[in-house]
Length: 261
Image (tube, rainbow, N blue to C red):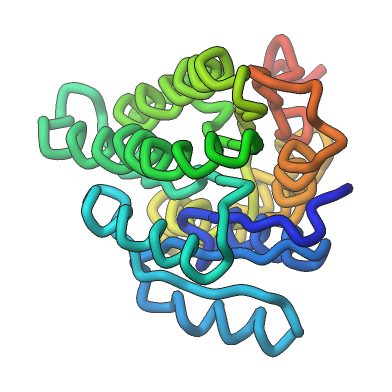
């Protein structure tokens, strides 16, 4: 996959699927700027730099447009352009619907929807200048394909990203910019580990094992699995793919029923 010498931004790239995406892009020769406000940002950057990868980090709050514009300007100053944007950063705080207040809803909207909106608005003008761009937005199978109770705010915002990514594809195709959406299933990430601790605090590992065994493929996804798909969609070889939603879930959306016979 041709991402060598490409300049990429990965939001939420310090951990979880974002870290897996950063690792794959960097290992294939891309220069990657991580936008993240996590305290472990610099530790992640150092880890990748010690591996010989061209990775840098910008402490960025994706709900703060001024902060985003400053970070985007710093990337352009450092590398001269931006070729790839991975809208990955996201949050999940589940509550039963009737217990979900506006604070919870706003929390999800501000990060899961306005975050990709703000970063894309800041980055796309730089892609237009070069008549080239690859945008990959990380949604979820939750919302667009499957759902459990208590996922309302997360489901609502993640499913909205499918429409967002498709609209970007139509609006900017004339500038050589493609936009695609990835919908991951359960992956071995801190977000899933947190869910395991909440669901089975006495033994979260058992919850993770049961979760993995519930998938037809028999394992949780790895962040690198998402990374390889994101890297392909961000590559030159994927130039004919745009506006598409790709599910990567170990087959979790395949069963028609949960009957075990």
